[in-house]
Length: 294
Image (cartoon, rainbow, N blue to C red; front, top):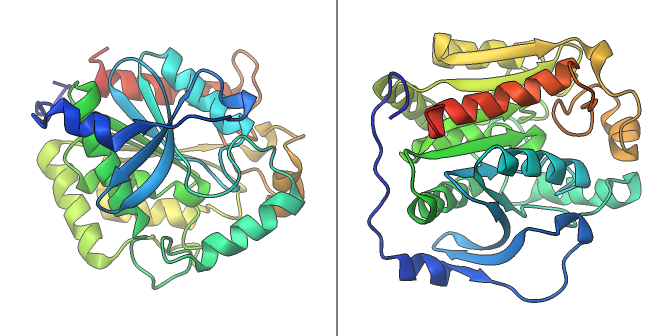
């Protein structure tokens, strides 16, 4: 039980079904993902590759654009080392690739027109959120514990919130949620889902933790204000000064994003006491409090 919350028991689904759905995949994978088991996850909503590592309650770490970069993997390892089983789904891009401009631009364009995502205003909730909720449900059955954490970033930032429509998800973290791309004050949610999420947060005493840089043009103060209107004091939005962002991020972030953006990945400065490292540590503490009772 987490403080102020209710106990969510692990599903009693037969473990054999989970094993069949979480089938290990043989073959090569990028060296940056060494230590992660590559699984083919087949759910009613479709099939995707998921990288899994660690022990303990499950945390779904969703990649930012343009995919599962070395910086995203580094963050996933920190979550694993904090005492969790990390599930890192491949949603777009080339797994393990360094985010260059040439590689990333076509990936972004494909995602923006994909039927799985709602990148622009008026589209409602991205359909891929249903698959992610199913993944959280299965991960909870495999790993047990009071529930599941969900960490989104950039393109997937809001998915951590929509995943809370799954009862197993009790620790959502939104890093620089950037959708819809064309409406700085908008939320990537249908009105029905927004109302259901607010009811869930009130009923189960949930809180969403969120981060952005103060001069991020992709995730603005208007968006955080919209989350605050939806969730009230259940939205814990934290803002870092843009001048503390890593000044030498990978080329995609330097040349395409062109603004401080990725708080715990590309724009993190891995130095003790640095504001971005403190943000990372706060996220790990949030997950521990809700999933480990620490």
